[in-house]
Image 1 (cartoon, rainbow, N blue to C red):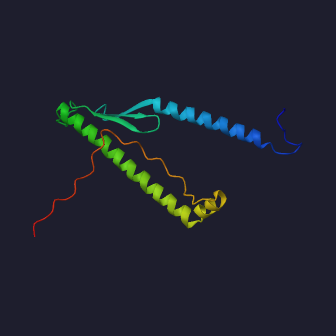
Image 2: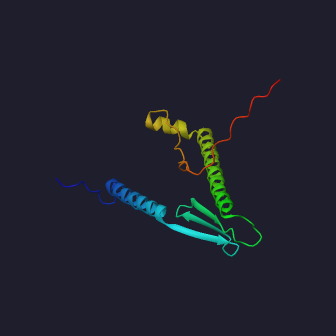
Image 3: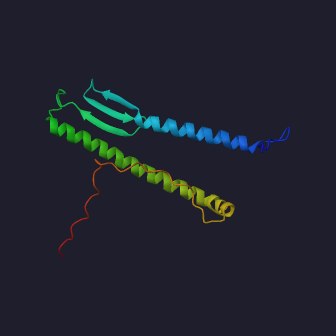
Length: 150
């Protein structure tokens, strides 16, 4: 049995769907390859080096302990680099959460969630932004304050 084709001057939704699926597959492949891409930047004539993946996620920060004026031992330089990476990831997660909250608020205020709910017949929520994966080097959350004696 042959595939139905669009009438002359008509629109072929099947072709549009196939094209959209092809573009989605190509985008997925491109995103995967970005994860495998590594770039390095430096400042201070090599005193500080930052390595990112192709998506812009910080992989490492290296501080050269031999940089004149820094007076760091190798362990301290490594610790500072790890802390910078953890601080960046914490800030990025907070920025992503703030953006998600703002976008949900806008969607709710504009009636988008009601419109989606009506179209889908469910209590639809706006799409959630993906948070970056938890980092094994991320700083743990701060401990709760100690109770005070009265």
